[in-house]
Length: 368
Picture (cartoon, rainbow, N blue to C red):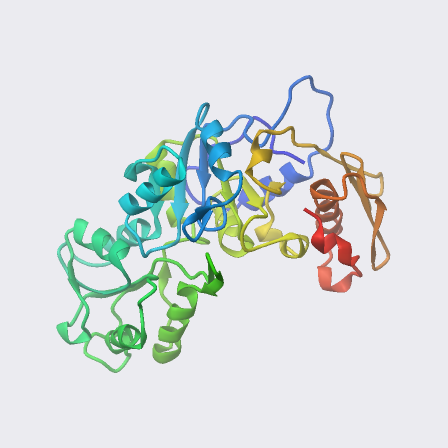
């Protein structure tokens, strides 16, 4: 249940990322004197922010010390779909939390979006921006002219999250993108389409809800730069010169799916949006190579999965789970925590059956 040290280089999107990750998760036990952790063989560690490093202004327990320890041996970079802040403001926040981070260590969805924008419109074009400082800053740095009004006949619309984005901003985007208007057919680029965002007080609507509102009005979809699309990962790989990257995320539908699309092995850490229940139900394209309770386990030996001869039972460090007919059975609790969850995921995923067709013990949903 690990990625072997001979990881392949993922410089651009491939169709094999998911297969490689699943193969790593299901790797059977071998005799080795080496201690293998999720960081074995990695030269660049890429981490999501919301739900991985922090929730709102506060650090997630054990994240800062674990990432600082990783930075002693590998390059650490940060990837965020949150378009509301500049790379420098993100770096300042991370530094306040105790990490050593510069602006160039942060790859944002606005940066990836502006790179896509540059391929769609002429240099110096007027762009309708829906979003906050993080997006406006990147658009201006790229030499484009920012407008907030569809009446200025923009060459494109670029949309990202900011807490103060409201109806008036979404209406301007809709007017500019209207199929019956003077700028019909212009490019529309979204930084990301996350449906939710974790904040200090809980889970709040994300940019995906705002993009959906515009989509409802104009009947078309945007080009998306952030996770789960590969563009933001390619931006990071190119910037950091990674040959054997590992990505950490907390969401299956954006983080893990995006890393798999880009051919990068992925860690799902259970400190953010997705928990055990979502991991057990993960579809084939959204399955991580590693499952961690928190980031301390980046530095701990990662146990491998052993399958029974018929493939129906998976065992991880003494925790065993079997598929018997339509029932998922816990045959050995092991630690009753993360290894039990790893075994359950391995058994269910290896069965090739959707989770809704199986009877799953409730306590597996709480394992981590």
